[in-house]
Image 1 (cartoon, helix red, strand yellow):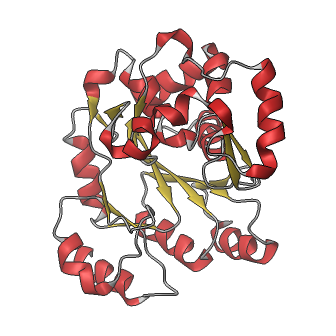
Image 2 (tube, one colour; image 1 turned 135 degrees about the vertical axis):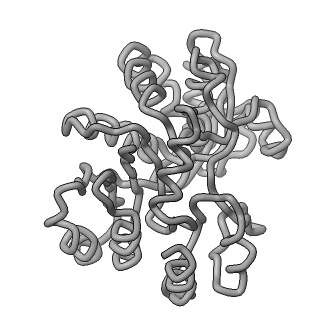
Length: 299
């Protein structure tokens, strides 16, 4: 059972190296993207300790802001890299540099071996109450959403929900573009977690679909947080939909700011005893002991 871990990172180099070492085995491979905004010294502290690993590759670096298209673009580039390198894989798992496994490599391998080739992806149809403050998530998809260096705005009726300084630009776009958009191919929109575990069948289907449906990829350039809808929309409209388990295999505690809370040792008993394979997120500058405690339990 060969696993490729695609890791998206931007800080905490020692934690990234530790994550790779924890997951490293004779049957694991790593494709890493580091945000281009990350300074050269930090990037060197990530790439330097890993440069001798034959199973580790670094991707071309994109400048990524939360909610923009480059997160998805880096992930699609990782698929291309896996194909170019001829890596013999069974699954690809997408992680951040602040994720950490809650189970041993043997347990992760066994879980996937017993899954009968199924993939793991959180999904729900749109509109959905998960994103009720965004018209059930439809606003992310049907309107033109833009991200300029981390500043988001959307073209909507009567210039609603955009910064005042962008109203003239929005009005100009509205004159030449339809306000509402429709997914190409009459696909039904789905949403869910940006992080997943996909089988080789799903990855090959995604690769072929992307090559044959450039219009859809271009459509998602103007979707808000596209990584939370792209894979769900493609795969839940595919012949593989019945091979997808609605589960992202992660333990996450959501903060009031709608971002993952940092997990600390005080909560160890709660998350280490779940059936989750991974947890998000950790920060060694806040609590460095919790990873040692996880290693002790899973060794």
